[in-house]
Image (cartoon, rainbow, N blue to C red):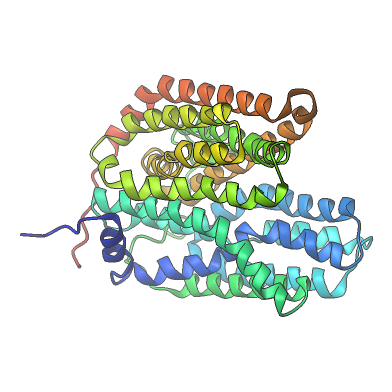
Length: 423
């Protein structure tokens, strides 16, 4: 009789050390290091070169625009040709473009924004590649749930840890040298992920197999690709709506801290936000898999909405930190459930692109929230922005509940994945 590991740590260890899983899982971590710090690094580089904040912001924004425009097309190429060619190409061009930006251009040059766009377009699609690979690997349902919980936890760790890595690198050199180092590490990780062996039939590449039919209701082909699928579109909308409150709170938290003391405590307050999310995944992650994902997802979004309302009760930096720690408990669980739903709802031939659109939805929602937060801060104040974030999260929960039946019908049509034969 098979004994399943108890506890999240042991389940993660059992999954991530398995043959044919360990290689791609760990190479994907290396390849994703630049994702969560490059915009900040670019601002630091342009300022180090003597550029203004306006010039730095333009370069960073153009990098993000390039990523938004290019990533769905790059991901579609992965789905049609397989990951190897795309990861090798992007793993080479991406660090080369960033190195050229750092060492051959300066603020005001036309080449600097052009290289920022090129770098954004050629960002290796490691996030989407690994998440689509989790969907295709021969795993049990509970193991796949654990895999996506790992992805959610990894995001929290990289969001906190990658900027710290940049800071350490800058202690021993310039911002330009630090950016180049991280870009090269990411490129090496992408190439390593490209050449890591995976079980046969899990790499995508449908075009090579003659499966490149025109777009249909399943979301294959067309400009929007997987978003043409009826259940994927509302799921992506929920993801975007759920990210707007995150962006709003990103602006409201430092403003609240500044109003109630010193901005020097902002980092500690932010840390409570991330710690609460990670602890929520560790504490509640195992029990979540006992409920069907289309049922628990709207419940988790509602729990996230309730948590988003807790900062309205804060009266000091300490109470805000506690509110964020408690309120963020569902965040990683929402993210993991979103990834599981994408793996079930998207057409199996376009999984990489589906995960890319899902990631873009969160990026766009976050950016809109930050922009709105900046515009609303003066007239509404931090407490008013917290209230707007709470209202937006309730809207996201309502949409999630409204679409629960549609998601459930599509998820029920998906065949049960084959269990891995080797342990």
